[in-house]
Image (cartoon, rainbow, N blue to C red; front, top):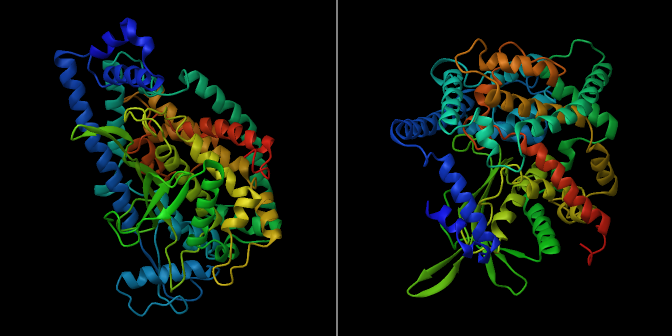
Amino acid sequence: EAFKTLKDREGWNTLEAAQKRIVETAIREAELAGVGLVGEKRERFNQIQLELAELSTKFSNNVLDATKAFKLKLTTEQEVDGLPASLLSLAAQTARSEGEEQATPETGPWIITLDYPSYLPFLKYSTRGDLREQVYRAFITRASQGELDNNPLIERILELRQEQAKLLGYNTYAEVSLARKMAPDVETVEKLLEELRQVSYDAAVQDLEELKTFAQTDDLKHWDLSFWSEKQREAKFNFTAEELRPYFPLPQVLNGLFTLAKRIFGVTITPADGQAPVWHEDVRYFQVSNETGEAIAYFYLDPYSRPAEKRGGAWMNDCVGRAKIRLDGTFSTRLPVAYLICNQTPPVDGKPSLMTFYEVTTLFHEFGHGLQHMLTKVDYPGASGINNVEWDAVELPSQFMENWCYDRKTLFNLAKHYETGETLPEHYYQKLVDARNYMSGSAMLRQLHFSFLDLELHHRYQPNGTEKPSQVRERIARKTTVMQPLSEDSFLCAFGHIFSGGYAAGYYSYKWAEVLSADAFSAFEEAGLENEEAV
């Protein structure tokens, strides 16, 4: 009520834009938090909030526990045929951590897990289709059985979200979600997604047909796709993702990334290890300074995969937001601090972390999120950094930063051989650029599948109705996949973005922001990426 009164007063137009945004957001968030509800409705709303928080945590823990539970021990050369040296080293290191003290990359034993740095390259390079099938089936059925079964949690979460939406006066939870976003309504989002689907579906069909021709079979299985896609990519562009790893040691990649940050944002990033406590010996701490050398922000970087401790994926979180604070009668600025968390290949056998190009783009992506938080000049915590940014705009800076991985000057700054210091050869740069859109129709359709499914579950699905969430996925898959998921595929049981993350009825944000970020980067391209003054 106080905020509403403030907005209605004559002095409203004298407030700064950030102050107005804080007030308007506070009013909206209060309403969405059930402040306007009274009596039994208010009590029920609060009960739902508590239960949803518990369900979200349990969902996430189930996925983590199910992922950790699977281990495939390999003991013969035939079982590891085709695997790159980097994966053999990681698998041997995993085996040693599991008690196989004599494990080596050359002689084994080797342990494959469902953690991404292990799972993804195994599917991509293992010549053993039977083992790929075993690992793939384990991955797609995570958290779908026994004590770790997330199916009942999914149904309950969707039911509670729908009830919550009704209490707030909305028809669906998707409408609640979009009340906080740039997109005006569900129909507008679905229109964009459908436009993208129509463009990408035929391309994905063509991708699959070309892959079948290349593999000389009409009977490709789901666990064959990564393997043959990589083989075809190697044949088309004449390089492997693995042979580029030596050119992407983490220290050099960070050096190139920080050079880019100085080039386009005028900030200097320096190590500040020891100035703040860390939760693991691998965690780094950095200071961000402006052009005069004054500290304006800090960030933690936790780069490596640790399956027993960290969930998969990569993310950025705010640790401390920028704010003007009063202490002992004087005002000072509290500087922002960010967490940047990745799950890339750790250092193995005395070598630095040698990254895939995909891991490089992931680091740039998360750093983009971090920059939005750290470079803010707003002194009000309610509107500084990533606070108060619409969820479907929050991916703009992250995807904008990804584009720089293909900028010649940036790439040559960060791609240097870890032993010789040799810059990435020119022909590799050209191949990376050429390969950028390889199977892009399939990649786009995959993301659209997730986006359509998310919206359908939060906008049209009826809890306790005739259709289960898994059946909704089967229906959505008919128009958003060119190979129908296997019957036991329980993808939803591990879809943490919408059931334990912040993307419920908002997964479309990635595609929405991709369009925005492409526009932003094109402005730099038009100015001339080689023109330092223009950049």
